Image (cartoon, rainbow, N blue to C red; front, top):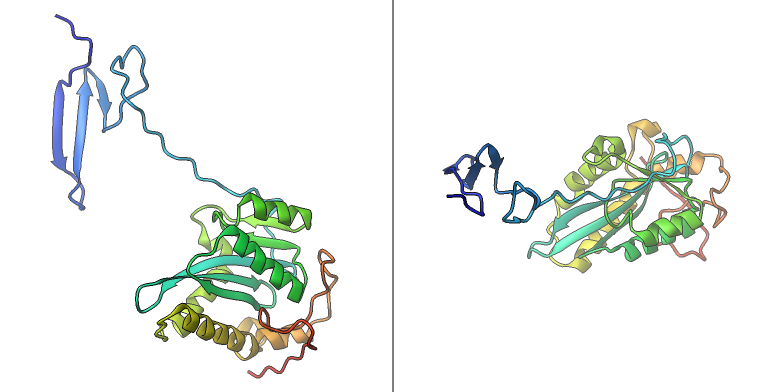
Amino acid sequence: MGSTYPFPSIFTIGHGDTSGRALFSLEFDGLTAGGIAPDPDASNPAGWKTYRRKLIRRGVSTCLPIKATHRGHVWIWDFIADATVRGGALRMLTILDEYTRECHVLQADRALRSGEVLTWLQKAIAQHGAPEYLRSDNGSEFIAKIVQRWLAQNQIKTIYIEPGSPWQNGFVESFHGRFRDECLNREQLWTLTEARVVIEDYRHKYNQRRPHSRLGYQSPARFAAQLTSSPSAVGLRPPSVGDGQTQNPGATSTTTASD
């Protein structure tokens, strides 16, 4: 006598992985399903639900990958995460000039959304002039429509690295490694306010005093000061030699770096 619903001819259960999670296997007269049934059709009259893998959102690059050749040519932005001693989340936004190695923004907060990320980018541009290109991963804050629309309006091209390919953004990964070794792993950060003070102090020292072998063992600020000024990228404001996000816009920018 026939049956309206498929009846499993074989049902097995076991512990096949190291996490101890049970693995199920069903066989329906040659049809095998590992916990997933096909769409409702002649072979699946029961109409079991089908689970499909969620598509990963990706940003659309507006140019080919490019290597920075002058100041303000390519900026990089990314996030690095940590926590306070009491377990509070710390998320830090990093904005760097790929050519001069200057750190324009190193902002700590509990969470940073796309609107806040855009605000910090605008502050960096007001301080240093607009970049020609922005390189980043496919983080939701960087591919948000509000960010994409603003970048397009200001003629700033985007370069998105391939998912799971951090080596395509090697400089920011290197910076984050130094930042963690030289600051985050050495300091006990109890509150968000304390974290902001300590991190901003590190950013200042990194720009003004930390030597880089690829810059002739000069600090980023001193190296940038010796460069001849290049044309402003978008015309929002000419680049200025300064340290970054806390400088008074009305004050005259001076740089006194030492190796």
